[in-house]
Length: 436
Image (cartoon, rainbow, N blue to C red):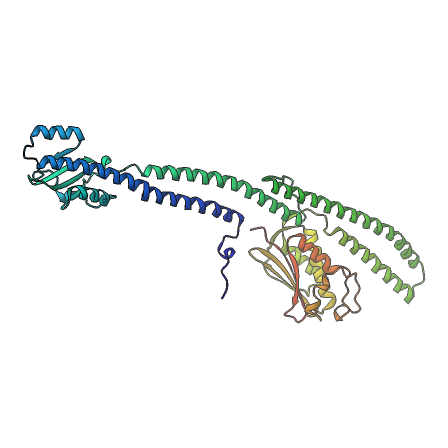
């Protein structure tokens, strides 16, 4: 039986979690205050009001029961308690059917009245909810007391709840505004980290938000500057080494060109060409990316152009238009490296384009010997040469897949190797589809 954990039912996002932590206590406190206010304070006030009315009603009934009761006594009592009453309600203009017997706190008033006047007892509220009618038996017949509803019940208790809700909403609004500010800073930091990881700059990015978020943003900017400086230094160093090595290579090529053409001379020329190609690849690996700016472009025509450069025998399937944001030259080199490997180690190859909702993919299939599953990750190591059927008698520096993966990851994607439906190797280059 799986154990239920809080994180399994809690929201995933920081904004939703913080908002939940804010709203739950506010709603809980508001509910408890409302319950206490109505079950304790309001109920007690209404009980006291009912007791006061019951005392007045007892005085009125006693007067009505007195044989010497006169109209002067009636006027005096009515003036003293500011309540309209009659000792005989037989001719009352309001019938019991026109009164509501079910209304809030009616049971409290009835209980207090019954304690003073006994039963039977009738209590009703006029249709306009303005007056309370209390009828009880007297010597003359049925006595009736008509009082203002405000004297019987606490009718403005809802104002308290309105104020509490109003202030709670104000506090929640202020908290949400503050939370939006903090979350916006975190999202900007995340966006900057993603852009920096893909080799793009956000010139308007500035540290903002709480102190901890600002420190993280400054650390990210400092890390990017250090990495950029390191990459520039490495590129400059290897560019210098490449330049220094090209000079003797050029002299050797010139010397060999002036010699008589023999098998040894042809082999030496081939070795020099391989060395020149390796220097170019080392320099490309040091640079990591081609230096072009990231733009929104159509990946479809570029892939078809690369496939056509290897000959008409490489079909390209998939949509004709695949819009992505990235460095066109870097991605073109990555696709070229994948196709170059496929053509080098197989007799046939094909390319498939996929335009997904979040990712664009370029899948290169071949019918070559492939790579064993346990050695596929090793193929991405720099200068790695797999001494199997796939690398026998093949020239190169072992940087093709390494450069292609570096390019894919610099764009926020990756390259995956798997078995191909053609029987060989499938290499899938995946980059984010940000055009949507």
